Image 1 (cartoon, rainbow, N blue to C red):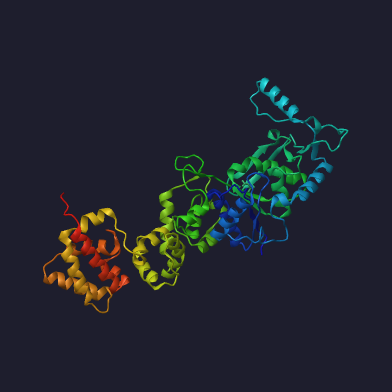
Image 2 (image 1 turned 90 degrees about the horizontal axis):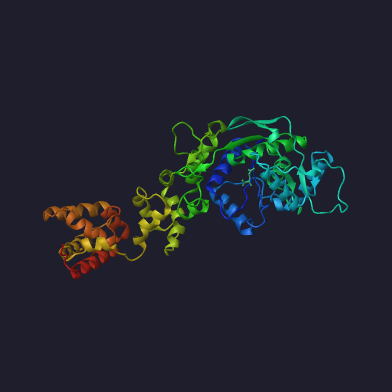
Length: 484
Ligand code: GLU
């Protein structure tokens, strides 16, 4: 294991946003490239949103993506616990240390006092944002009841500048005069984000903090905390947000943002990672990357400084490319649950399923497409209304019956002899292929689009082929002749 220790620290919200996944991915790639450690930490100090269920969704999402963590929930590690609500005594210790060294103080200001200060600030007409200046910053005394309700605030410096060299954004300088005495611990002992984050990153030995640039406002306060604690400051990498096509922050209103939705839409984890990796990072013109290539090629200096815009079409294209990189056996394995979803229970080693994959793979983009494209091999044909109306008509009934007679004699019942026999028959009778092709396709598959006719016949086998052609002929004979 190398020195590199990176982490992903989501606040569970009920789904894992794909923007968060991209953050996790970059850190994970960095860890894997450097034989480092990838830590998963749950920032669950918002007790209302952080249910067991929403934490589980984070873990399920990470597992589905294959972003395995070396330390964290359910895995353990030497720096646990890895869930913030279980670390309250650690935060209390660090807060005490800061109080002792003069970098923090107990603030007993009441809500009313803060509200009054805010009101006075508003009335003063100043354009500066409100920053509460606690009278307790400079008070040496304490209330009579030393347990009186209080928060712990950071005694922020007002002079000087806090700077860091961001791995993505370059050098950043923030004037300390813009800082306020932010709260470290609430009265119930829950840390506020900046404090919990610093204590955790510090105690977990994190060497590089990667996150969205919506957190850049927090970085100077966090660096001030490291300095106050006399601790080494990690590196920071802030990446631009993932935006919607219209430039807004990507949300549920624009697209599927929860990563498990992509699982349910029949996407591959590797495709999701590939698409997200490219949304904000580039390596020449290359669009398609395997997981291994991403690990090898990722670097912070190629993370762009402008936000990537989500493009559903491109995402689907990347997914389709990844699907086609799989072997037939792998496609079958991924498709099995989607077949089960539509009521078809087969195993990944089912011989019919395996036979169909080569024929459906060129057109399928997701595993839902694959399941849909092979459906009629496993159950009775369901006719698409339009195709049935157009092709299963009295004029085609005879041709379907004749076709059944012709193919009945073919042995072995495989694509090439079927093709040769049917073509010879058509030639002999001077019939064009189109007389039988579409009616037969509709009769056998219910659809007007499918793999080649003889490929379908081969996979269906003789018995089903004949039965479907004959049923198609009956339906055709009984249909009304279209009037227009
Ligand atoms: N819990 C924070 C979030 O989800 C983590 C930010 C960070 O990585 O420091 O935004």
